[in-house]
Amino acid sequence: MIDFELNEEHLMVQRMIRDFAAKEVAPYIREWDRAQHFERSVLDKMGELGILGLCVPEKYGGAGMDYISLGLACEELEYVDSFLRVILSVHLGLNSLTLLAWGTEEQRQKYLVPQAKGEKIAAFGLTEPNAGSDAVAIQATAVRDGDEYVLNGEKTWISLADVADNFLVFAWTDREKQRRRDHSGISAFIVERAFPGVETRSLHGKLGIRAGNTGIISLSDVRVPASNRVGEEGEGFKIAMFSLDQGRYTVAAGATGLIKACLDASVRYAQERKTFGRPIAEHQLVKEMIAQMVSDYEASRLLWLRAGWMKNKGLRNTRETALAKWFATVASERAASDALQIHGAYGYSDEYPVERFYRNCKGAVIYEGSREIQKLMQADYALGFRQDKPVRCPLPAWPFED
Ligand code: CAA
Image (cartoon, rainbow, N blue to C red; front, side):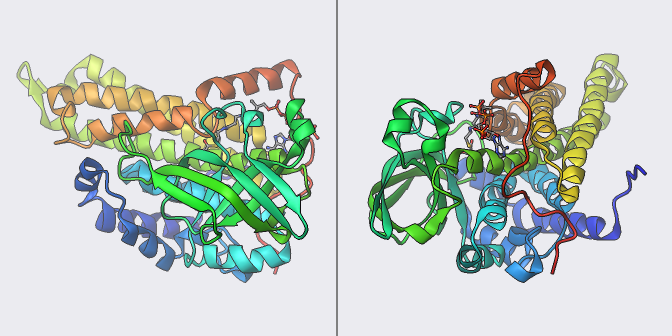
């Protein structure tokens, strides 16, 4: 049976997050964006409302909602500003859900529970100055020393770098495999900000998502207990790719919310603004742009919903999630560009939000798997060069077991 209806819980999450973003963020976002200011109190409020642990099982301190709720939350957050959705992508999508699937019971109790409750903030450290799309090119190392690993390296473009308490970091544990670019020499670690040798600093001057915190993490002889290794030694690359299945999902749903924001702003403006003696909504070339936004919004939504439905069922969804991420982010770029065009010169200033949407949309076409990586993946699936195997530690299906 195919059911396109959202249930009561979905509608409740949607309403709650819409109200939160409209009340706590929308009135201030232009100011924060202009000042490149990250407003820490937003994180605290998201924690209080249970958003930071939305689809973490209740037994681990979360709200126990399904993965569709996560997508709906991302739509609503990015409708107001991308920085809000990025918080959820990183803290919950890339980090907490990875601990849920791959963490030991001890790691879940120690790290996942406070993260789900919003008492601790989490981030994800894969990207390095010379390793983005080519994740195997990372240079961070982790050398075993008794009951500890000693980590060295630098991670960049890390969302929440300057505010997170815990980082999920990827580093080579096998230097010989690093020389051969054999991904099975990479391992994953939970690194606390409090560990000596961890330093972070913020990056400024970004094109968009200026209200978000993005930065660099430096690791200098950081001693990490062996019990903080996530998964087995050598499983780090797979864990990173697994994390991206959830991260890309949140990006896809968020981009869908951004398209809706562009559509709503364009519809409003097109009905108010008059040229040649009538509202511009009556000009066919404006209608064409609005029609494109409608179809992009509907298609993006169906793509992420299918990926979310598969997550709920516990099915592997790497292909479907990557497709949703690719389509929605590229479509959001189109929508933001057209929304600005419809607003004409007014869209070119920050008097209207479409200018911010136009700058914000670009990041998602680059991060968490660039447009080009997503295209290559889809072609490889179609050509039979890429097939998904069962994952050793899959995301738990929903409803969660007690
Ligand atoms: N879940 C679990 N395991 C997975 C997996 C997944 N989603 N995807 C792959 N694997 C496993 C494979 O089964 C394979 O296992 P075996 O070796 O046992 O067969 C192993 O991982 C290697 O997989 P691939 O052969 O698919 O690896 P590849 O080298 O062909 O991958 C690639 C190529 C698709 C381009 C991949 O490198 C990729 O996705 N690159 C993009 C990385 C990326 O998104 N970077 C962005 C950084 S994070 C970010 O942007 C966040 C931020 O800062 C805001």
